[in-house]
Amino acid sequence: MEIVESAVHDEARQHAEEAALAALVDQYASTLYRVAFSVLRNQQDAEDAVQEAFLRVLRHSDSLGEIRDHRVWLVRIVWNIVLDRKRRAKTRPETDDIADLARVLPANGLTAEQRAAAVQHHAQVMRCVEKLPDREREVMLLSAFEELSSVEIAGVLGVTESSVRSRLFRARNLLAESLQHKRSTQ
Amino acid sequence: MSLSTENRVDRSAGALQAEETLRLIATLPAAEGLEDRVKAGLRAAPRRSTVIAWPFSSAEGWMHSAGARAAAAAAIVLVVAGGGWGVYSHIQVAPVPTAQVDSQTPNEAGRFSTAGAKHVPQTVEGPAVAAPAVEKPEAGKTQVGQKHSAKGKDRKGTGPAAEPRR
View (cartoon, rainbow over the protein chains, first blue to last red):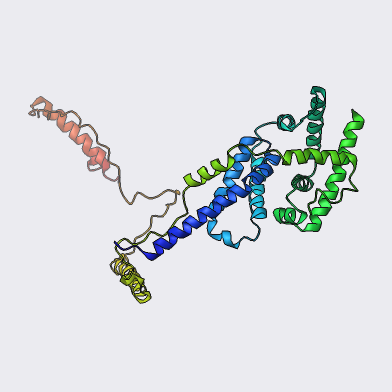
């Protein structure tokens, strides 16, 4: 039986796409997970978001070669997914999320009292971050990722780099004011 | 250069602490075996739709010629168009009515007329009565009958009373 040349070509191309996708998963799954977790604050939800992001990539795997910066592209995909999910599903009250998150943050070398104080401080910071305007909060969250430069954050959010800088400046000021106000009222 | 390392000078202490918390969140390790689960999910996901190869054609078959493909496409178009024309040409148009039908119009009372129809109720037949027996005239009763008949004539104006006075 003769084998059609195009079939061989398609199969080879499919194998190449699968290999490229597997390489992307190995390289960026962890980053995407952390980006998703910073917004969703839930392990299972973050993992689902990463899975959905790579499924979207699979659907457009034939255009992988046209992407210049895979990391920014992938972060942008997962960023849109998590924002959409957060907007749609408000299954748990915000306070529960913050308390859970504050507990899982690392507190190595701290006494029990120090750890309790750290948990309280983290929760307070997260509450203040939640009260920031959307634009400022998004820039603030993404700026916490060491591997993302201001240019890359601009690429993820679809704005200019100067806009990212001005938003970050505003976010820091608002956050500092908010924390100061909280401390003065306590 | 990342944003977290630049512009450190103008940060206030509160904002620095806040960013430290956010950085801790950003460095939380991913769940164990995440990559394997994602890959397994991708393998289980349905692939993109592909064009199914025609099973009866070979690599050097006639379908690999551009001219033959164009001819096949033209034949398909002809068949479809011919079928459409066949259906169209067999459609019989309904005949135009020649007789004019009067439409029913409301009568003076504002109702539609009955077109002359009359409702005849079915009545029950009455009792059959036997014909009365005819009596034979007798002698005594004849004069009385004559008087009666004379009076009747007077009433009618044919008798002497009806004559004009002189």
